[in-house]
Structure formats: C-alpha cells, structure tokens
Length: 276
View 1 (cartoon, rainbow, N blue to C red):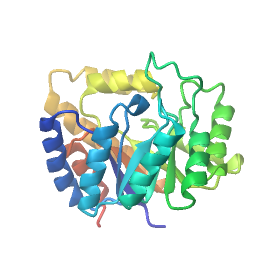
View 2 (view 1 turned 90 degrees about the vertical axis):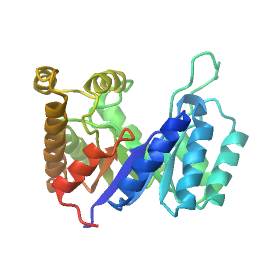
View 3 (view 1 turned 60 degrees about the horizontal axis):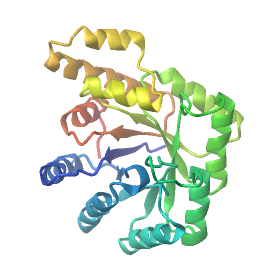
C-alpha cells in the first residue's frame, strides 16, 4: 500500500512570519507531500490568517486541508466558511473540537463528531474529513476505552481518516491501533510526528496536550543543553528512527508537525528515503 505523507503549518501573525512561511512552503514543495494542513486558533482566533494561507496555497494549486472547529462561531458562520472552502476547491478538512477562548460564554462544546455530522449534512461528500486521534489518550478523556470509542463515533458520523497527536513511543501507537481494531475501526489512522527543534517549547506543548516525553529522552536532551547543533542532529536521528519503526509496523503514513521549519522535516524525509 502506498504510504501517505503530509505536512502541517500554523498561520503566521506577522508580515515577517507570512514571508518566511512562503519560503518554507517553496522548499518543502520540492518534497511533494500529499497535502498540507493549516491550523486554526481557539474560537477561530486565526481565522483570517488561516484563510489567507489557504487562498495562497490553492492559487498555487496545492492540496491543502484547513483545520476547522466551531469555537465561538454560529452555524451560519460555519456554513459560510464551508462555502468559502468549496469555492476555493478545497477537498479536505481537519475537523476538531477545538478550544473555546475564555470569556466567550459559550453554552456548550461542539464536539468533533458533531462537527463531522454538521459538515456532512451541509456539504455531503465534497470533503475528505480528517479527525484527531490520541494514542496516549486525550488529557480530558474519562478512560482509554472511552477515547477509542469516541474516535469510532467520529468515523461513524462520516470522517474518512484520522491523524494522531504526536508521540515519542512507537508502542503507544501500535497498542492504540490494536485497540482500534478490537473496537471495529477500519479507517486509516496516520501517525503524527513532531521534529525536535525548540525543546523548551516542545515540553510546554507536550504538558498542555498530554503527549508523553520519555524520561530518558528528556534527560538526554537536557544533558546537551549547551550543544544546539548536537540536539538538532540527535532530534533528526531520533524522529527518523521513530518514523521508520512506525512505517515498518504498518502505519499508513506520517503527518509531520513542521512548526513552519524546513530543515528538520527535510532531513527526516531524506533519511526515510521517500522518493516522490
């Protein structure tokens, strides 16, 4: 089976960041990923920036998947956004629960399965819908099994495939896939990997999203704190090896959380010997 490879960007908030992303995109385009995804801030806080990036990439003929969540939006605003993406000939979405910004006073959370259902009701089968999966379980999940069942609900509501939160232990992915199979999930679940760049930021992200950094890995990198080049080299080697294990073990593909950087993803791609 042909493996799928995709890259994720976040929408920049400054003119300098926007120009940098254009250069990053130009370089990563040479690798010919299957598609890019573009994130969407809490409550649509990066809505305009996200749409701006999507419009640019579609004008270049690039397959791009906007992240989408209700946040503080009304159904009418969400329908307008879906129509905008259809007009841009966007064929793929990443549907997420998302976070509600503090102070918005929203009555209830719109969960990802409800969003998938809403998209299907309004847009039929126009979009391929990706959803999130959590091999180490969502930090708010009641239990491991309930989280697996929630993923199944997203598929039952019409999602096509899932992209995982990043992780550093391949066994967490393989065990998760075993549990998904037992639950009757047959849709592909693509492994998300995070190249190791800024380790302090990575620790902060991981604490917020429940991604476990193995103690040995944390100790190893902290012990190299005075050697940024050494950390970068080790990070590429480690994530390359992780990706190799995932692909060899049956993962249908890899989703790279690029953090709008070229070098780590490019180096890992080269190490994997991906030829497009």
